[in-house]
Amino acid sequence: MSTTLVLQWLAVVGAIAYLGLVIRESILCWWFAGASSAIYVYLTWQVNLVGQAALNAFYVAMAAYGYWRWRGGQSNDDSVPVVRWSLGIHGVALLAIAGGTLLVTASRNALTSSELTMIDSVGDSATTLAAIWTTYLVARKELNSWFYWVVIDIATIVLFVRQGLTEAALPFAIYLVMIPFGYIAWRRTYELQTNAV
Image (cartoon, rainbow, N blue to C red):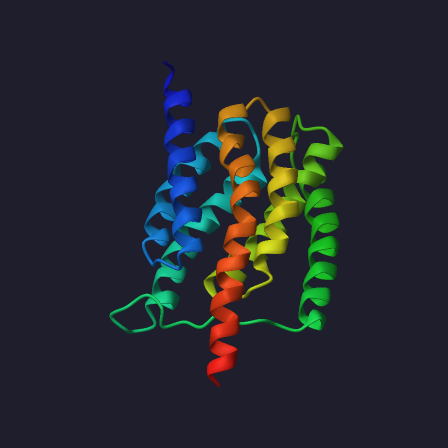
C-alpha cells in the first residue's frame, strides 16, 4: 500500500472521529481535527489544490482555537452554549464568500500557472472560503453551521474525486449522512437552553 493511500485513510479516520465527537459536543473533537487536517495539508498540496491545503492549515489553527473556545476556561466541555445567529449575518457572510471566491480565483489564475480547470479553481476557492467561515461557526457552536456543511461537503467530494483523491473524499460522503444527526443533537441542546431561560 502506498504512503499516499495510508495517509488518506488516516485522514479519513481522523475526520470521521472529529465529526462524531462534534455531534456529541465533546472537546476531544479538536484533537482529531488538528491531526486529520495536518495530513490533508500534505495530500492536497501534492495535487496542487492550494486552496484546500491553505484551508487545512487553517483547520489546524482552528483546532487550537476550537479547543480553547469550547474549554471556556472550565473543566468540562459543555460550557459553551449552542447559539443561533440572525439571517442577516448569514446573508452578509454568503455575499462575502461569493465576492471572495471571485477575487481569490482571479488572483490565483493571474499569479500562478495552476493546471486546474476554471471550475476546479472556482470550486477550490469557494469551498475554502465557505469552510473557513463555517469552521468558525462550529467553534462558536452556531446551530446553522450544519447547513453550510451540506453544500461544502458535496462540492469537496466533487473536487477531490476530480483530482484523484477518491479515498480522501470518503469522509465528506460520510459527513453527509452524519450531518442530520449533528443538527438534531445541537437543536435539542439549543431548545433545552432556550426553555431553561
